[in-house]
Length: 89
Image (cartoon, rainbow, N blue to C red; front, side):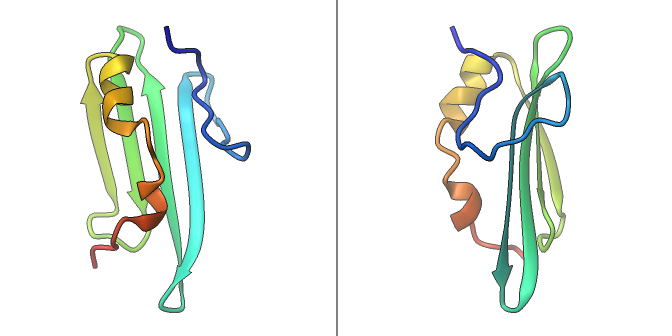
């Protein structure tokens, strides 16, 4: 059984009682500040909602849903990609 919240790094912050994971990272790319956010909520009826936001991408946000926390963890267990993913301009 997975324990909530899911904390990957000591500086992960949660801004909602319903959020189970929140990762926010910033860096400079070609002189521009880029912010990437990955936030996960367990909805009242059980599904998992994921919102990702990257300031320099178009579109800048995506939302997806998973049936269970195990399905989410299978896809997002390793979130190191959040810093290495290419920017889509």
